[in-house]
Image (cartoon, rainbow, N blue to C red):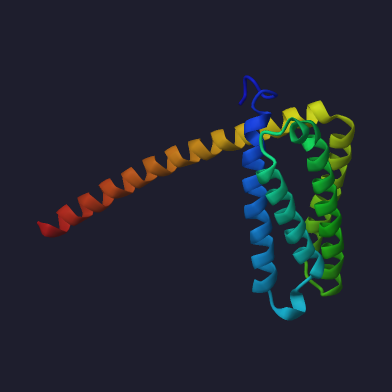
Length: 166
């Protein structure tokens, strides 16, 4: 992905669709997991929009049309989700929650990135591919580090058990 980002955009369409499905489902589940007085209909709407986007991307994979418009659709999705986050942050502020600021900041940053993506679709597509590539590399490095830590933990447990037997 790092060496041929635009060629890998087609493969990434499937990954983006699945990620959007998972993200949207998570948002909907989070909505129903909140106390009724803390629920925001905008958070639910964001989850539903994200799920619809994920379904659309997943069933449109391989389409040249989808490949051509994906950066634009992605930009519009980022903008819509960011607007919903800003509205949700206002609701959190009214309810006296202190973490509303973070939601507002990420909403504003998301709108800025979405607008930039609308006017630079090739750069946007490249950014998307690089971001996913770097995420996958960091995920792999994290798994390797976790394996090493677990191996050390296993050795520690074995030594502790051997000492207790003696």
